[in-house]
Image (tube, rainbow, N blue to C red; front, side, top):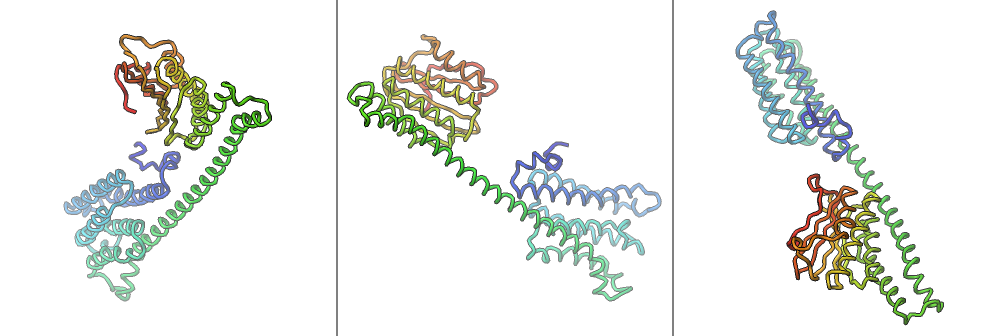
Length: 410
C-alpha cells in the first residue's frame, strides 16, 4: 500500500510537507477508518461461524455485504479527497439507519441487544464518531439525531423493560454519544494545534525574512562603499581626474550598478547580485543593459550561481563583439522551480545552420551550464537579433545546447 493509499500516515516526512489542517484530516481519517474495520471484520468473520446460524441468514449476509461495500467506497473516496465530504457523511448516516432497522428486526431476542450478534450497534458507533469529527458543535446535535431516532424505532419493543424508558434510551446510546463528543474534541484540539503551529511558523519565517533583508541591505551598503563611494571619494580628494575617459567610464559603470540595485528583486539573493555585477561590468564593453528580475529563488548553489553568471558574461561579450548593437536586455525569471536567465539583443543575428556556433557559445556558455546540470538554448535569425536562454535545472532529456534558426519569444 503506497502513501496515497494509506493517506500518508506511515510517512511523517510526507505528512510534514502538507498544510496543518490536511495533516489533521489525514490522521483523524485513519482513526475513523480503523474504527470501522474493528466492527466490519468481526461481523464478516461471523458469517462462517457454525454456532451462530443467524449469521448465515441470507438477509444478514446481504446487509453485511452492503456495509462492507459502502465502507470500501467510503475509504476510496476519502483517499482521493483527503477528508469526508458532505455526501459521504449523509450516505453513511442513511446506511446506518437502514442497518439499525433491518439487522435489529432480523435478530431474535435476547441476542438483539448484544453487539456480537446485532452488529448494527457497532455501525452506529462508527457513524457517531464520524459525525463528531466532521461537524461543528452547533450542528452536531442535529446530525446525531437521525441515527439515534432510528435506534429507538428499531428497539421500541424492548425499551423500558428493566428501567425507565428515557433512562434506558440514554444508557444504550451512551457509547454512541460519547464517541461523537470524544472525536469532536480530538479533531478540534488537533486543528487548533495545527493552526497555532502554522502561525508560529509564519512568525518565524517573517523574522528570518527581516533578518535576511537586513543582511542584504548591509551587503548592498558594503558593495556601494566598495564601488560608488570609493570613486566619489577619490574624485573629491583629487586622486582622480573626472574629465578623463577612464574615470567617466568608471562613473558610468558605478551609476549603472546603482540603477540595477534599485530595480532588481532583492529576493534573488546571490544570483541577482551576481548578474547585477555582470550587467554593470558590461558597460565597460560599451553596452547598455536593461536588467529585470521576477520571482527568483532566494538561494541557489554557489556553483550554479557561478556558472550562470559566467555564461551570462560570455553571452554579453558576444553581444558586444558580434551583434552590431549596444543595447541588450537581461531578464531573470522562475517557473515551476526552473530558473531562466535570458540575454536578448536586437542586432545582426546569425544563421545557425550556415554559421556553426563559436567556442564562446559551445564552451563558455553551453558547457558551463551542462557542468552544473543546466542547459543553454540559443535562438537567432539573420537581421533579427539573438536570444540566449540559460536554464537551470535542465530537463533530463536535454543534454546538448539548442541552436535554432528562429527567434524566441521575449
